[in-house]
Length: 116
Image (cartoon, rainbow, N blue to C red; front, side):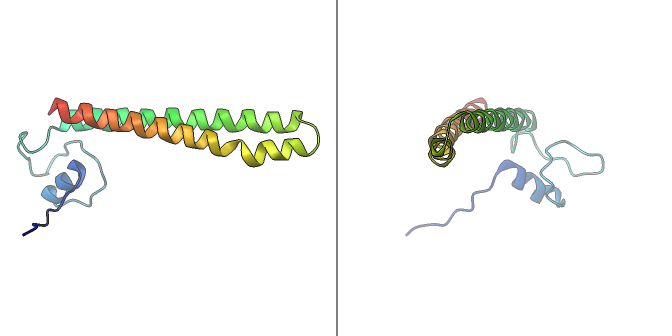
């Protein structure tokens, strides 16, 4: 017989234990219930969260630079070819950026699980 298991992130489990408003913050706040470090390693979770935020900022910056380069190329390209650049070129760039972002995010997640 299959058994259903509820899977939640460490942030959700932490918020549920604290009975907080689930703002997503992992930091300790005065007046809150303390939880054991065996349940969740706050420092490791915060490091993983910060690394994923930095990755998201780098990915968004790369996207902005790529789109600016495409707009510049479209302006410099004569006639209808400029519109073709704007119509076809962004999709492969988005696909590559998304694939690289997901691969790096999964690597951060795997390293986080190895640290625990």
